Image: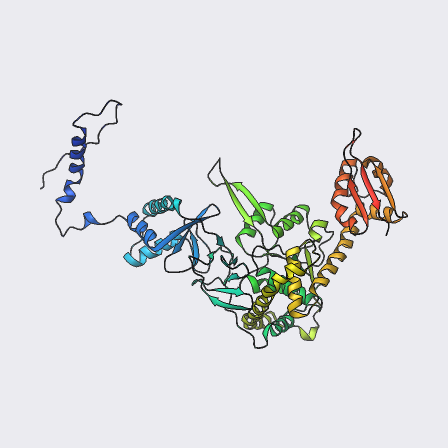
Length: 532
């Protein structure tokens, strides 16, 4: 039996006095006592020299990945050249990417045949997070991205495990993997789906549109609008109108919505119902590329406001999980697609962001089974996508000229420039069609607002030039319709707010409504009709 030795003692805490002259030697002796059994171990005993599981996992992370920071998150990028950014802790996205934590577990199991302990994994991840604090900043994108060097070139992530993407340059496109050091980095959420490799159709983009029209029963006027929305969904950092598939019952709105969605958001992308809260909708919107809501029969005020913010870009700030003094920021600007028969009364700010796409009734002899329809779609998907990319490359080529030559722009100015470029390539009239649709939606806004309808009727009954000024309380008595409806404002303050909301739509119909500077008696309102 071997002789036992006493365990070395840990030096006591400092007392605050000046160190003794023999203290360094005492510490050295204590350290030698603690490590002496390792030095005396025989050469064949390798257990003392083995790295711990935590050190092995940390070494795998340090040697196999580099780290970048973006949007309050640290990502790991494999040094093998893949442009996929993996989050360190979370479970990560789909299509075979996962997180760094999952990747380290996989590599450890494959190399050792053993499963690492949760304690070792937690220690390794914590160490890597600390080491990554000084990592450089590099932007990480979801689905589409601008080229870091060429502002006219964009990228489309196909959602493939190997990171292959589409580089869309002015006049051409190609499938290749972006350089993880110079090109865009992709993040993958669980809502991101893989897309097929696009194919060049023999008939060019014209054949692609023809195939899409054969699958989706769109009207002649709506087909170019649908193509324009799909192109806008391929371009990053751009406000896009809300595509709204409408039509009578049986026109295939839900099926058509899924077809359009899957062209730009993956093979298995699905339409969703509206969540019960704005926070839930914001989180799911930020996690995916397109926001697609199905079978809407009306728009609540909060949903209307939310859709406006999704189009132009917004952020949701929530308390950080397991924290009382920090917040998490969720950013989103997404393409939006809705389906439904009638959205009801639209607010003016949302109406200016809407793009109606009308579907035509399907004759009984042309109806196909669900299985046959989706089999045809799966076969045609690569060609339709390839044709859209052909058209996108040509449109990208015309965009600089659109910025210079487009004299007047509607509210969605970026989309208007794209429509100008699309018309220059195709010979269509998408820009004039879009502005005409916007004008028609203004009538729907006014018709759906009792206050706007009453003000317009009253102003148009006057001989121009005509103006009225007075307090909102007086105006409330002048406009009061018999009988009062539930939605009619009961107080001057509510009437003033409703007038401010309807002012842009009324102004486009020749009636100027505005609040005047505040006086001692209140803030008067001015309603005027210009001489035409």
